Structures are given as structure tokens and as C-alpha cells.
Length: 111
Image: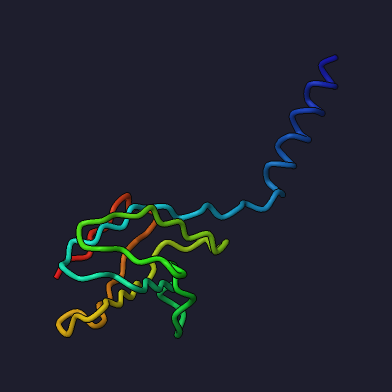
């Protein structure tokens, strides 16, 4: 019986060590603290040279509104560049920022 317990424990440890860790989705709340409609939101890990697809798709985020954002790209990185594009706002045509999305629970884009 003692041998069985040790064998089971050794197998459990081996499975835990050899199983690849799965990347967790990055989830946060995005708030529009501007007076303009946010029409596009792009992200990309800081080490990438191009923007990935629009997170919003065909949605927009009006002034004062908030939206739950999930970035499920399967990567195991936390620092992302973010790009925001606004509708009919010459002062806010495009705004960029870099954040640690693993630590971010909420982000407010402001003018």
C-alpha cells in the first residue's frame, strides 16, 4: 500500500511538471472618459511590430460608457501596446498607450 501511494504521488508530480501551462485570458474593463465615440481599439504585445485586429469588431464605446474586454490570444505576455481611434475628434484621432494587462482591472481612456 505504501508503494502505491508513492507511485501515485510520483505520477501526479510528473504530470504537473510535464503538462504545458495554458495562457490565461486577459480581462479588464475599458471606460471611455472622453467626449468622443471610441470606434476602434487595437492591441498587440510590446514586442510585435504591427497592430492586431480591432478588439471592438463593429461595436463602439460612447462617452462615459464602459465595456468588458477579453484578450484571448493564447500568449503568455502581459505588456501590450494599445491604440484607440475616435469618431470625428481632431484632438483625439489616435491615442496610444502601453499597459501591463495582467495587472489591469480597469482602464480609462481620457482626453
